[in-house]
Length: 289
Image 1 (cartoon, one colour):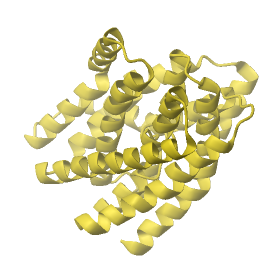
Image 2: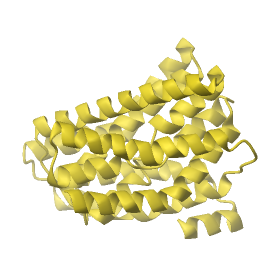
Image 3: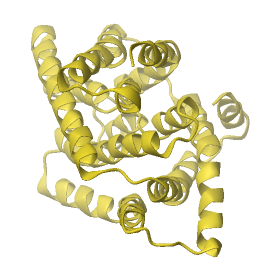
Image 4: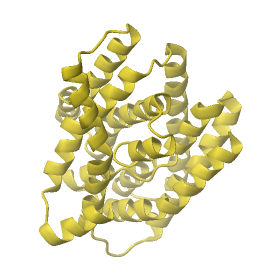
């Protein structure tokens, strides 16, 4: 991340190109390899998906209540809501999962489920909350269907489930791509942070940080005990739920001109402070589970 930050400040790299390398090249390869190497049972998949849906729903209720207390305008409420509901499951969550669990395929598959849900969620509800027009909804859906991530997910699940042997001339380069993902994802995140500029009005930023980085993990912890998750499953779910605000929340705010300065500030401070909170959550997951 530090190298990405320095390179961006010095060379003014094209962030969109770096992002596209991640989205269209490295992340699909990573997801395909990780899912092909493991077999996640349907009941586990449904349990994780149900957890995510309930977790986001609880956060949504909390955000709506706080927005009413703070008497936020519709536009500010949308940015605030997105900053709490959308967390960085991709170029932050995937590397963290890979490092904590030492490339364990099962733990990676749980993170991938979080990543897929967040991708769908941010490009549907996230955009709809900022621009409530039919053409925007259709474009968001079509854009998502053009992303190779979903097809890499389905292909990896299918080949892994039916024990289909992938030839070496495909699997070996696929592993090279997967291994490269962590480094470039963190590099890209550092470059993205270098481009963020902040001004004033940090009150809402602090509230967002408190909800995303502190309240969010504690809600997830309570749900884990309630549902009865244990072991690596509980650890991976708790850590995945503690990620900072997604950079894409600032990207769509910029694209639709809805308080992009506030959204960018939240992403910047959330990413910085998460180095402390996520570290604590990782330690907590090891102690409790």
